[in-house]
Image 1 (cartoon, one colour):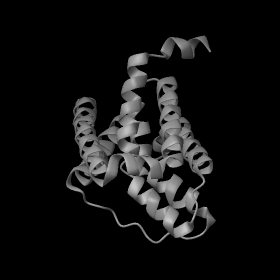
Image 2 (cartoon, helix red, strand yellow; image 1 turned 30 degrees about the horizontal axis):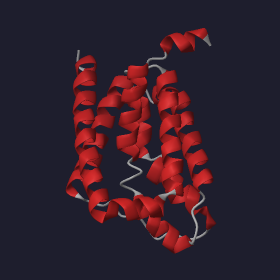
Image 3 (cartoon, one colour; image 1 turned 180 degrees about the vertical axis):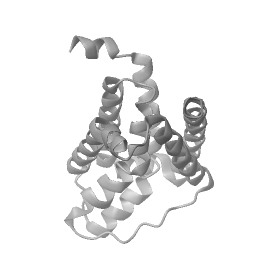
Image 4 (cartoon, one colour; image 1 turned 90 degrees about the vertical axis):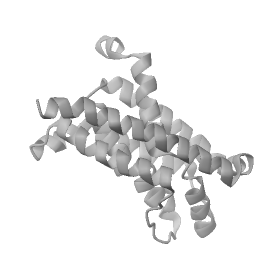
Length: 197
């Protein structure tokens, strides 16, 4: 417990939280969430949040071990992850949408909402990549903070859409796309040096 407290750092927690917030992009996903609600009639905010939290924490704890099974180092995964973040950032900035199939049934809160929209390839890549820079306690708390934000957004989706409007949501998506692009550049440069050293 004392070791975890010694590893806790407010600055690292903030940075990790911002990375995950940009990657998860729950605000930018509001139009998708609204579409899911229209198709299924209901989205269980608590269930979607808990499943997403479980997936992210599991990947934080065992993701690196899975990589070692395949003989992949954390730096190599971080560099690969930076390319995914590049792609996600360009998607957000340029307004390119990845195809998502029709959603039906009560499982919509888990698939596709919890996975892969919230806890998708981008967030998993980011979690493992963040381990190259920050201690687990800071990343775990960053995941918790983001899941709380996800829960609040899921609960208030309709109201947020009314307040921001389509223009406001579009602007936020572009802003976080640029932030995510800068994060991808930093992630690549800091880990590529270690990888090719």
